[in-house]
Length: 239
Image (cartoon, rainbow, N blue to C red; front, side):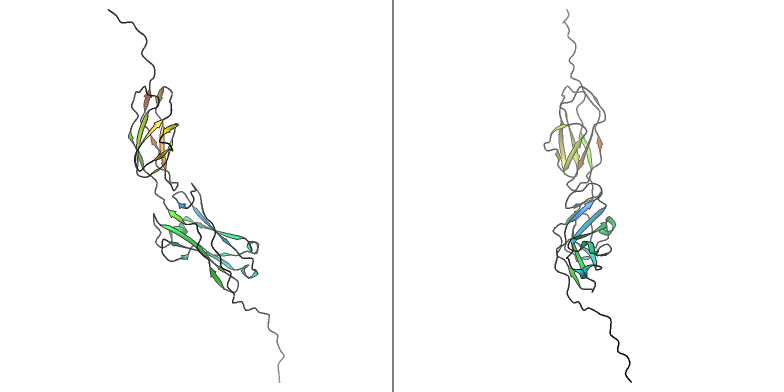
């Protein structure tokens, strides 16, 4: 005796991998943002990936991968579900500083490269071409000190002083300066010249340096100095 005939539920065999793609932008956030650098103030790295307008990707996954220097790519952070609203657009994943620091080989002075894996709902996956944007790891701040104080008292209303820095970088001074121009310190000693100052006592002027990656040095308060441009009173020579 034959049983009843059961019609199986419809099923789909999909062996087509998602289309080739290139990982998109890599942007840091938190603190001071400088393109292509991961500095000591940044807290998040956001990687954006283009998503094909393909229905089988809705409900699939997006996994970011990264490598340090010439090492192997590895998963970083958690995968995200691809949402239908991103088909034909992009989807971003934010990575924490802790995610980045957990990468094999992560260290000061290294370079991080990012890519992604897109997997559809049938588990077909494609690894993208690496993003053109890499991040250089520079999380060490410059250290500066006052090397030569302003001569005091002085009649020179455009006085100078010198700092020592262990890194090159942009100078910030509490008063306007005329030199160096542009206002950049070298690694070593840099002489800095104030623009015209009024006569008086200066006891709270400061200087700092920001390196190319956006790391700020310690702030140095300059030694107190006095500008005295008043000539002695008129007099008549005596006997």
